[in-house]
Image (cartoon, rainbow, N blue to C red; front, side, top):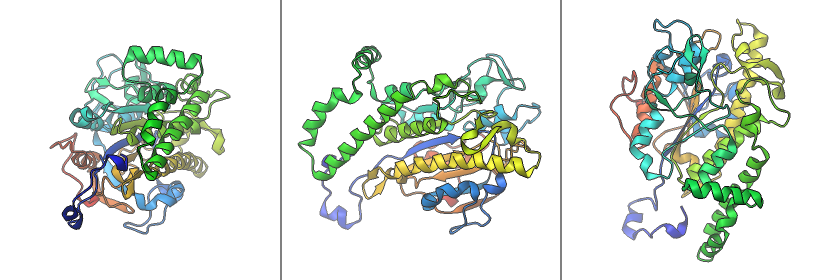
Length: 428
């Protein structure tokens, strides 16, 4: 939104305190596998001015922009008579709130995810109804966890009860989807020509950009320059890491020499920022790694595999290493929040108009617990959420109550979702 696009407001409207413009609310869900070291996740005090525990310390600069919510649960991620398979159920249930049918065949069934409920109601207002990303390539067939199909672990977005939306793990493919045009035939030909001559996707619009800039004020010119520079910067980084998803097909410990997990994550975060900034979509999901992932983290001093460490057996040494992995991921979240805050919207910024759910479908990985989940909510939801707090809810409050509250703020209300029992009034 440029200032040149905004009609002047009347003196009476200004005197009444009416905003000069309104910005859409965006919603994103970021999933991390294998739970957390909960002792280093949950703040010791409630309310404001709480001390950030070790895992959340990288978020210090953004403490007023998010809240930690304790006491949320997904009861349908529990066995409920289905036996083992907590990793599959954790991810399948995280955004659907439904019990997954235990099958390793094609007859998968769980439920429509909250992001797709929103997309079905407001997705026609943007070019892409929703955006699904991951750092793991999808596995669409076979068994992955104790009789559960791989589709449950490698997807968190479900368009219908038996149709997962496979996330894009290749940054280049995601970039092209966002910026290479809507016509699939034109996209294929234009991309081939551009890559042959090593041209930027921006070359096709530079003349239009120059023409637009001549009609803009100083603030708008700077804003347009920043945007075009950001697109070009990401385009270069995408080209450098174009084989990321190929080199690490399953997200496990076998990593290519040129692969950087941190850069892969940050590219995906940057793509989400641009997708929200341009209003290409208002809904995104990001499966950073599938539940049960055995990726090693030698780059943070943890050569052991993630899933194995999550079964710590109460051993302090393993829990400390698990906390280091968890802290690495919140460091990447801090990068995402910083990028969102750098985009100005009116008197605030892009993060102010977002709701970012960050968490896992498992609390303590050793116990495979699905209550008191590690959930963080960032962004003010267009001014409707009071952040900067540790909100501790009593008992096992359905995580789906949070989603009901978020759908209201997306202008996509629904009366019931999963095992919801109502909305969370304390967000306001």
